[in-house]
Length: 152
Image (cartoon, rainbow, N blue to C red; front, top):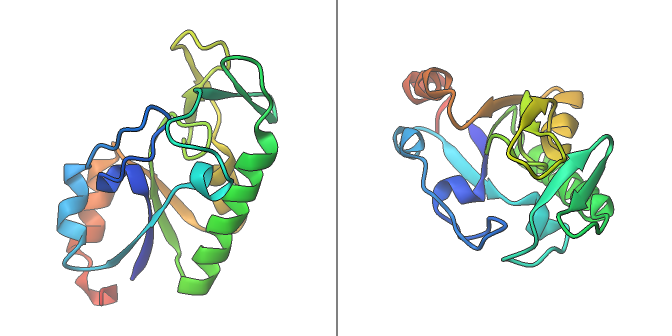
């Protein structure tokens, strides 16, 4: 199975602060599935590193007040195109992110507080029927590791 994965979870240094952190829970997936690294912020044209951003309603705004919604939407659209091209039905995304977060994201105050909601990419993928799994949902990820019937 082809699975979209937030590139930062594979150790790619594309996070807002120029880092990436490999998610150990994904290690077992490499031998079973094709992992397709994606970074909607980069695909939308934003640099790495970049000023932190959070969702404020339907908008995405940087800590210094710049509206980057257009870049986030563009990047999410590019990832959706990749999902269609590769026939992806599942995505494993970085939680809390204004792009990839699913279910809980930063509240837009840049205070570290969380609120219910999803990032631009997670929302778009769900709207198109793609299953979204957060990086800390280790039981669901482990279930994919054990699913060799739909592997390579």
